Each structure stands twice: as structure tokens, then as C-alpha cells.
Length: 236
Length: 236
DNA sequence: TTCTGTGAAATAGTTCACAGCG
DNA sequence: CGCTGTGAACTATTTCACAGAA
Image (cartoon, rainbow over all chains, first blue to last red; front, side, top):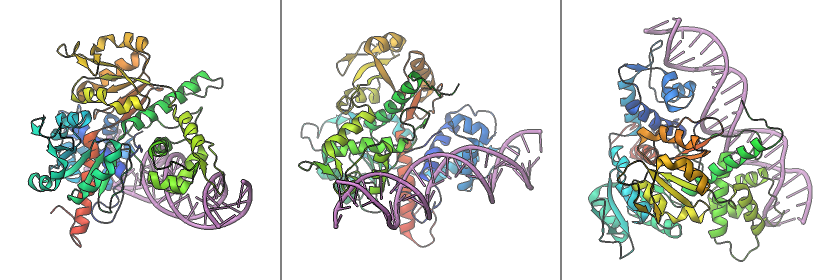
């Protein structure tokens, strides 16, 4: 089963368009999209909720609920028309619009993300990378010159930036976030472990690699303990 | 507000030790730990659920529930003893044990993670990096020589590896996962968008950057639409 | 018959609110 | 007093299970 939570700030349902669509659904939608365009769906024109569920590793009921909650309809006895489905999902996710990304922090992680082709391929071209370190500003990363964070206001306007990605040391993450918000960015992806405080209307999501690994190791230890112990209640 | 995850496979509660502790709780625990060791908690010996909640950006009731679910006790009228609290959280998270990491895929993302000091600092030293590309095998990354994926069995034993991190192209992610599992790894962090199928007992978590950005842009569009006007239900 | 769409039940997770300890 | 620990309410999300469309 998917989901959960990890450590993401999920500023869930406010009023307006898309009301009633949970962020869990959005996350899966992205997954469905991925499965449909990459998956072994070639040939057939339609796909059943069962098959899509299998590809995405979720339950069929969940697939149907997700799609129904977006008003996407299938055909009984047949399934969902793949072309239509992909188009609808794209519409909902806004894949059509490109959201230009600025990476703050030209360290290892920042440089890696700047070079990561997967982002541009899915509609998030990296169009700027900034830092405050004089040794890094002016250097070239992924075909771009590293700008100074002080120029962020100008860059946001000039390059039509929509999302800021913070890959700085945790200690300065909040300061950086404040500056991004001041520069007009309303979406922030935070790779530091610091929870960010932002004004209403700004969306933040947090991805903390060490936390992910800790969750993993917690469950691992637990499974190990369960397997080792006497009253092993593990399934088959 | 908090929460998670994004697109994480959450192989939740099986029987055994730690039963009744949700992965959402574990994720927050990691956050509490972070706040306690880095936060402005200096001086005072104890911290209230209110204050910790503020630092971690969650509700006080959630903090109390989380800690109570682990059997961590506070003192009424005072709060939780910080030293004891940190120690207990470390015990639960298993921070004491180092879990050595092998990175599969020596591309940009893999190299960045190998160089990312934050992992080792939090108990996850990167002790191997492998790839299948002859042009990469044998090169040096973060002070290590890139090994061939074929040597994974030997590496797992020799270097006591515990977690595999997949940063390969999505198309081969499942194959890689199968090999990691066969080599004895029971924890996998998957950076590709492909949902992995693994046998029971193996834990997988998925982190997909593009999905995170898509969730972000979905909410952004929605807020924008809500702000833009009365009944406007779609893009500008 | 196959497969959707959806009430209703089940499960998970969060917040309220307050009794009661130190 | 202040602050924890927790029953109970509430909200969110998933799953069951089945009526009914194609």
C-alpha cells in the first residue's frame, strides 16, 4: 500500500477548484500517468482498474475512487480509454504547463538535481541555480551559470520561475525560504530536515532522505525482531 | 499539516516489536530528534509538548500521542526530559546502529547522494556505489571506487551493507531491486518513478522528485484559481 | 459477462478536551 | 498552576461488496 506520509507538509484541501481531491490521490495520479505512458499498455485501447492497480501497486477500488473523484469516467465491461485517461490526468496535474525550477544551493545535491534530466522530462525544467558562496557563483552547472541568491527577484521575473528547490544546509533553509517567498515563489520543495514556516498560500513539501532511511531501518529492525522472536506471528 | 509522504510505499504495521507505531509517527520522530539536537533547546533540561510541537510544526496533541505510543513518559507540569527523550527516540529509530548504504547507479543523482554528508551524519554511511556502465565502473566517486553491480553479493557481505538506494533509470529499477533482494538486502529506497514489487519482508520506500513537484504545482494552480476569482474553475 | 461506480463498513490518523499528577 | 496522558469525537482514506451499465 502506498501513501503515507513521510515527512511532507501537506497543505491539503482548501476551497476552490479540485476540492475534494486528496494529496494522496494526486500522488497516485502521477504514478498512474507514469504507468500508462511507460507501462506495458501498448496495443490495447483501454485499461481496467484492475490492471492499472496492478501496475501501480495499489488496489483496484482505490484506482476507481481516485478517477471517479476527478470525474474521469470509464466504460463498464471495458475499462478506461487510455488516451482519454492520460489526457485527463495531464489536465488535472497541469502537466501541460511547464513550471520552471530554481535550485537554491549549488552543492552536491543541488548540482545533481540541476543535471537530473528526469525533471525537465516531466515538465519541470531547471532554469536557474543560485548560491551565496563566492567560490560557486559564476561557475557553470548543467549549462547554466550559478547566480547569486541576491539576484533571485530578478531571476524569478526574467525566467518565469515557479518553484524553488532548497538544497542548502539546514541552518539557512528558513532564511532562504523567506527570500523565495518574498521574490514571489509560491511553491517550495525543501530537501533539508528543517520544517519551514511560510505564509498562507505558499505550498511547501519536504523531502528528507535521512528520515526516509530511518523509517526504512525502523521497519527493518522490527521485521528482524519479529522473525527472531519466539512467537513469530509473521504471515506465510 | 505534516505528513508525508508523497509516494512512499509504506509496508506498515506487521506484528512484533513496535506494533502500533505508525510510519507517520516514525517520520515525525525523526523530525523531533532533529529539532531537539539542532533546535533552540539549549539551557533548559525539559521541553513541553507545546514547545516541541511548535518547533516541529505539528500539534501538541500529536506530539503527546506519538511519544505515549512509544512508552516515552514526560513529567506533568514540567514536560519531557530532553536528554532522556533524545535517547529514547534514538533507541526507537535505531540511530545507534549504523546502516551502511549501497548506491546503485553512479549517474548524477547517485554521485550526489554518495557525496552527501548528511547521510553519514545521521547514521547512514555510504559504503559502496555500483553501476553496470563500463565507463563508470572503476572510476572514483566520493573516495570510493565504483564497483560493478555483478559484485553486489560480495559487497553486501564484505561491507555489511543494509540499505540499497536505487538511482538508475526507471526501466531497470525492478531488475536492480530483484538483485538487491537476492543479495540479501531487506531495505530499499527507490528514487525512480517505478513502483517496485518485492517479496514480503523487504521494505521499500519510494521518493519521486517529479511527483513531489507535481503535487506542489497542483496545489499551486488550485490556490491561484481560488484567488483569481469567484467561479473560475480553471487555468488563467 | 466484465468491469465501473458507489453506498456502507472498516481502518487510520488527528484533534478536542479534560481529569489528574507533580 | 502547567502540562501530561487519554477517552471520545472527528476527519480522512481505504476496502468491501454489489447493483447495474455495456
